[in-house]
Length: 339
Ligand code: NAD
Ligand code: WQD
Image 1 (cartoon, rainbow, N blue to C red):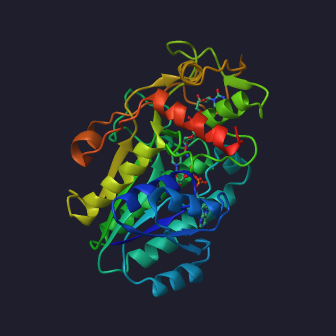
Image 2 (spheres, protein in one colour):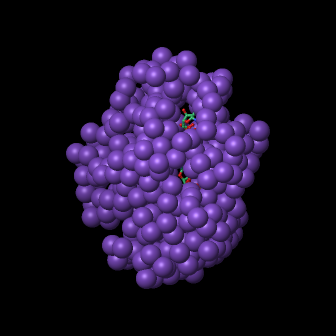
């Protein structure tokens, strides 16, 4: 069965392609390489023994998207990762984010909703919840006004898909609201490769430990949490990749209850920034150079998933511990730096 993976050379996309190929799916990746490199294709082949098909496509180009679907007429499902992903950048350049994340989605939906049958998985984010009123957070929690254009594109993206599904019974879709993806593949052939200074905590930690960054700044030590630092739900990217395959199969096997569904994808455990640092030091044997400084604007104090719906309805659960995720992130960093 042929599955289209947009943004499939990116961090989460590449790990998902590996899981799809491991389960025998034929994958075709489209990516414009704006935040990824073509070498990922060879590394996927090294892991799985099979090179996925690849087309360099910019999904913002409506006619190119249309031509792609004229060429590939037998696609059974789409996993849509392609998007611009940096919260700060989205504040500085909102139109880039609205154009890329929303136009790409709309052009893709126009094509897939015209098919006789189509399954679609959308990369959403826990960012749609903002600061939760109650923790752990369930899928029923209200979506709060987004702090940044990036989060707004995920909220609007979900609404666009839900509205399209309402009038398109042949289209089945699931939005997966990921919490904080971390780590890399056990082979250290694919992982998170930030361009320039990392925005995310875990690559900042590993780059500091390897000597590329001088010191990690912990953003805020005075939050109303167990140790004063922010709490997040860090999910191993391989578990996350597997969640996509499970969600896709739910749709392909007609197990869905409605033609648009939403699931939280996290571990259900909240870890503080100090706990993440502690985990890293434990698995690496390294002492991390860090200082506690001011809070980062826009950060919520604590968020972690209620995973009951994902566990019981979707039939997926996270298997890896934070230590395992940190060990894979460290292995990847060392491999990338030739150490
Ligand atoms: P990533 O940047 O590594 O992957 C995105 C890929 O999409 C890149 O390879 C990029 O080149 C490609 N792309 C971007 N715009 C494109 C376009 N117009 N046409 C074709 N390709 C395009 O990011 P990621 O961390 O793997 O995130 C994947 C998805 O998951 C995104 O939608 C992101 O918003 C969502 N998400 C990420 C996180 C996270 O913390 N990493 C958390 C929640 C949700
Ligand atoms: C994690 C924790 C920081 C860097 C982001 C997006 C969210 C979702 C996932 C896509 C926070 C702290 C970080 C540093 C630090 N993405 N931190 N020093 O902000 O939870 O979520 O990625 O949908 O929308 O906002 O992830 O990794 O940036 O931060 O102390 O140098 O680490 O304050 O508490 P975040 P993160």
